[in-house]
Length: 272
Picture 1: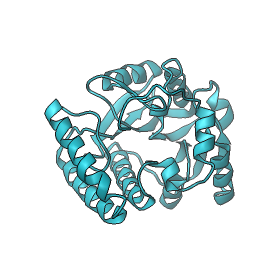
Picture 2: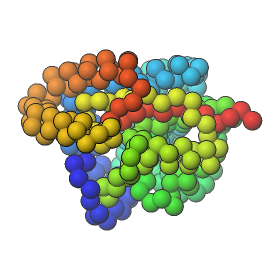
Picture 3: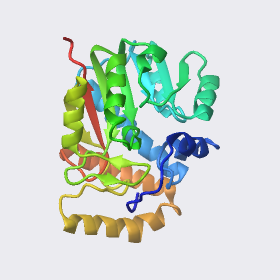
């Protein structure tokens, strides 16, 4: 996501092509190596579990709707955590078929989240719904509230809803296949769908290129570092650079409330 684009985006065709071969980059950061993506996923899973625990959610025995299951990274994590029930959806037939073969104990559906009537397909009463690195792929503003309403309908009263996205403080950014919405737009849309926001913390500071900088000076500094140093070293030393960035982000994330990049947000459907 280095510049804005207006190329036509057909979700079905885009994800069918992207998942024509399946590896970690297809569900993660497609422009970065697999070994680097492993560190990105480690940080995201860590942040997700931290915030769920902080908001009083008990994973063991939970029922989970995993949106955009992709290569199954989070399915593996939920299985290891001892969830009782898991249903996954993805817009890619190749992804859902591969997941169903790997995890026959769970159910997976090929489904566009922006298509109304999700609860009729996957059921309802989930204690946790996750949309990790997914909602920014809904670029049509008319489809965005439909997706949120779908997720609300699947969640049990009092249930948790986890989102990983860039919640912009300035202007929105549209890259054609990705749209980064403002925190204000998110807050308004979530409230309209019947959610309350209970936690939000930054995940990344340096691991991926940021787009939500506090000033032009900080944006120039960070972009210069990414373009001249990180983007050149990551392909050569993906594991080492991923490890270094992970520890930097983990340290900064322990003391800073805002960052220039992706954040984890936990919402809740009120009990009444």
